[in-house]
Every structure is written in C-alpha cells, then in structure tokens.
Amino acid sequence: MNRKRFAWAGTILVACGLAAIAVWRNIGELAERNENVLAFDADVIVVKPEEGYSGFEGWGTSLAWWGHVVGQWENEEAFSELMDLIFDPQKGIGLNIVRYNIGGGENPAVPNTLRPGADVPGFQPEEGRWDWEADAGQRRVLLESIRRGVNIAEAFSNSPPYWMTVSGSVTGADDGGNNLRDEYRGAFADYLTEVVKLYAERHGVVFRTLAPFNEPVSDWWRRGNNQEGAHFSVDLQMDIIRLVDEALKAKGLNGTAISAADAHSIDETLEILEQYDEATLGRISQINTHSYNGSRMAELREKAAALDLKLWMSEYGAGGSEPHNHQDMSSVLQLAERIMFDLRLMQPAAWIYWQAVEDETAQNNWGWIHANFVTGEARYDVTKQYYAMGQFSKFIRPGSRIIPTGDGRSVAAYHERDGTLAVVIRNERSIAVQATYDLTAFSYPAVRAEVYETSESKNMEPSVLELASNGFAIEVPPKSVITVVIRDVKWRRD
Image (cartoon, rainbow, N blue to C red; front, side):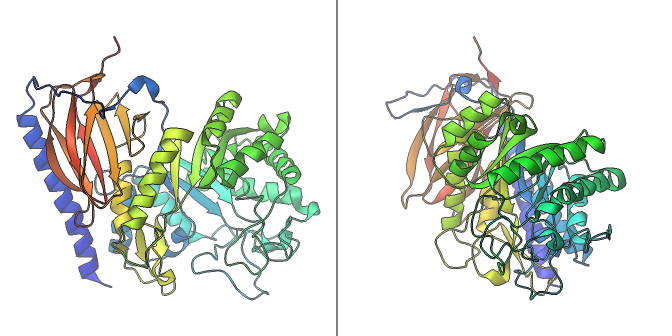
C-alpha cells in the first residue's frame, strides 16, 4: 500500500476545493451590477443559446475492464478514494453514467489470451448452470458508483458465453464471422435478460438500456484475440434484437429498453441503421455509436431525430501520440478535440469514455487513471487526461443545454435550473491565443467569472476572470484546456 499516493490525491482534491471556494467568495463579494461593456471586433465568438440543443444527460464510462480489477481491491481507503475521484461531483469529476459489461466468460479449456482485466466472469459458466455470485468486482464498482450519484446505467455485451459460440471462445470466430451458434440465439437473449432481471430484483439496479452487441460488424473479432468480441451480421442483429425485446417483455422488465448498434465508427452505425427493417427500429429506443472513426455525424444526428430515438456517443478513448507518460498533453488535447467535435456536430444526449482506469502495465496514455491490472495492487496514478475530462464533466452538468459556438475550439453549456454558463476552450498550439466571447444573449450580475485550467503546469487550477456585461476576453495558454464558469445567469429570450 502506498499511502503517499493516496495522500497526494487527497491533497489535490482538497486544494482544488478550497481554491474554488476562495474564488467563489471573491466573485460573490464583487457581484454588483456590471456596467463594463466590451467592444467586439470581427473575430468575436458569439454564444447563441437558440442554436443549442437540450436534453443532455451527462458523462460516463464503461466498467469494462477496470471494474473487474479495481472492484477486488481489499484496501477500502484506496477503493473509496478512487470511486470519489471518478463519480463524486464535489470530490471528483462527477460522472453520472456507467455501462456495465455482461461478461460471456471464457472457455477454461482453451489457452487464455485475454489481456489483464478482460477476463470478465460470465454468469453461466456452462450450459444449464448459473453462478449469480460471479463478477463481484465489477458489481461492487457499479453499486458504489450509484451511491456517489450515478443515475443512468446501461448493460452491454461483448460476446455470448463461450459454450454458445461457434469457435468455443469468447474472443471471436476463426474467420471473423458470426460466432453465435444458430441454435443458441434464444438462449443468448435469455442470458442477457436474466442478468438484467437479477440486477433489478437482487440489487435494485434497473438498467435503462441493454446493448446486445459491441462493434458487431467489425471483422477483427477472431479466436485468440485479447478481449471478448463477436461479429454479428445485420440479419443476425435484427433477430437478436427481436428475441431480446420479446424476452424483456415476457419477464416484465419494462424499465429496460434496447440500444444498438454500438458500431466502431459513426459511418458504420448509420449504415447499420439504414439496413434495419421497420420492425427492428421499432424495438430499439436508443442509438449508440462509438466515435473512433467516421465523418457522417450530422447525418446520424438527423437519422436519430427522424426516428425519434435518443442518440448516445457510447464509447471513445484517447491515447495521444506520445510515449507512456502520466503528464502527456497530446492525449489531453485529443480528448478535448473529440468531445467538442461530437457535441458540435453529432449532438449526442450523453458522452461515454471507454475506460476511466487503464492498465499501467500496458504502458500507454489511454485512460484518466492508471493502476496495475496484473498485480491488482490497490494503488493508482492520476494522469493529465483525468483533469481534461473534468474540465467538461465537472462544469457541464446533466440537464445542460449544449451550445456549439462559432469557433471549433470551444463549446458552451447553459444550465437554466442552476443558472450557470460554462464555456470550455482548448488551445492545441504552442503559443497563447486571445479569444473574445459575445454573451449578449445572457444577463448576469457578476463582474468576475471562475476559470479552471489544465495545461502542462496546471491541473484544473482555479482563478478569476474579469467580466463585461456583454461577454469576456481571455488569453488561452498554450497547449491547454480551460473552462470559464459564470453564475446566476439568465437567458434573454426576448
């Protein structure tokens, strides 16, 4: 146990909290009527709330595969601290959505090729036998996340149990094709829905949606892969969606609907939807897409609107371009760019990161927090990317109206109930840049705003910014992500 590691993380949280309180007190003391007015030039960035979209549900992470590892930590202090960092809105960055991985469970008779953490236990280790105590680690993380404020949970599957597969392995078929045996289609639907039923009845967790497959048209799910995965042709997807829908209804699981298709790219998701028949589209309530690739973002948004279906960006991960380094800024800027790009063009109701915690032994810059998945040691390192995520999730809260700005390097969000306006700005360049924002669509009494900065030398560090009655001008440091937060804001709708 490394108590210095825990003390360091706790000190960061306390210091940030105290600094933010001091900033807010300073702003409160100066919250008089602001008569200062900015003169705008041609480069001003206008924030137009009428061009935004409502219904933003929040930010999340899948629990695969880190939940399986971290959930087995015996050190309660370290475990609780890590949960707070990810899910607590005051002590951490306040994620409110989780995706729970219903594991297939690998064949014990084949060589284990799964990467550390990816050996998620299945609930049916062999045909006819159920093990409802399986997957205790991920379950612990799920339940503790809900205790800290998570209010939306989705279940998803990467592969059927090994004994339902053609290859006898959850890693995929020999040829990268369909790996679910035809005679087990109904059994697979029963398996997924029985797990949903278990969590509702035994643990009080109602999964709002169930995604039966993950990246289903990809051809890299081949036997011997290092993670669970299965190809599903479009015809097979439609049949599984039908069977899962029937099973949910037969078991009275009315609180859980179906999401699909969780393709690897935006374009693939759109292409799959265009092939689904009318009956299949009528059985799903939510479109899930990963945004690792693809360019048809506006088309997918329009497709979801035409079908009157919710749209989620259900998976993305940033690794940057530099060697393994917890202070890496390339992954910070990659993450910020992706979030802004998705919110501006695709306009999803939720934005979900792949793994909040990554394996330190993988020696890459994916994830926000690194822990050793091989030894399972209860210690961790917080990376720069954690603070970059916090620049969004801590200040753009569920219920916000997302407002694309006139500049591709920023996005705004207005939370009417809380009266807050947040503007997140990124600067990937090596020099500082000036930015001016026109906020004449809003009114606010404050003369100063809160500013939070993540850069090479700062981790979501707070400061204050002078406000004019119609906006603000700010210098954005090189290679940074900053968030400007204004309180007691009202939208002028006249």
